Length: 343
Image 1: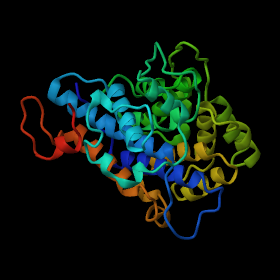
Image 2 (image 1 turned 90 degrees about the vertical axis):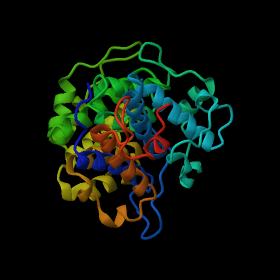
Image 3 (image 1 turned 135 degrees about the vertical axis):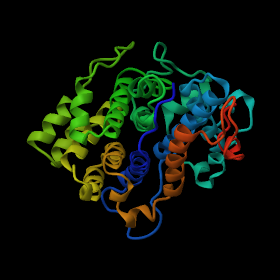
Image 4 (image 1 turned 120 degrees about the vertical axis):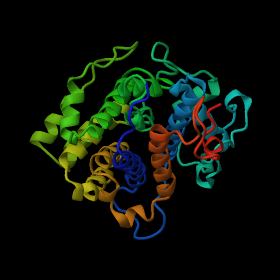
């Protein structure tokens, strides 16, 4: 049964905030006064996650069955082929240029590495919860999976987040992705960032092979007793793991909870080198406060702003209205299937 889509403001804020956090996170806290704010591979992959979820929903409406992780996996393979990464074949041997996202020029540009994702794609096998696609516990498993929190029509958002992480990562990265997606979902239900974190912390998440019971407790405790302190963020976000990125992102978002603090939150995370925490905090705060809370001067320079906003709007349109129609329903938009092929 298809349930209602998330509120448009939540979806737009989450995806725009994620992409902005990704771009600001690599500036070291000194944002250039002019010029584009460029995405990294984390922001690029998150865009293909959203596109994959849209395609999965389209497929389900037309064919009666679908598998979102598989559709997202095909999206990642298109990203890799477009970037000229060797050893990766397009999904089903098809044309990687299907759909509009593959035609965005900037998504062809290499913006840092995503080694675990690339290795899994080159291996040609998508991992599952039972058999993860790799042993890496790196941060990309979390940042690219956060939009799963907007997906209320397939199992649970947390389980979907873990499944997207498992495509190429394993262990604690799957738990971090489940927690992160669950927080986005809870924010969409009306919880504040701190409330969503506390509820997610107490919810059961899978004990899959190689995982441990990582929780949000350290981030919540630090935000309560020592908010917005650089030393605390450095401690929580040490390393480039998905778990540390989640702890750092939650700490930043809870330390700067108000809508007028989005700029300060991202600058704080970036200034201590917590780039992945900035991405997570951007997604959480964007989901909580909506796109109008995102600094306009930054948003106007954000390289993937139009792409991210279009994906967010189209995701909500697909889940609410299915513009391409359904198995026995005529399309209201004759071009939608070519934008998001569900085949």
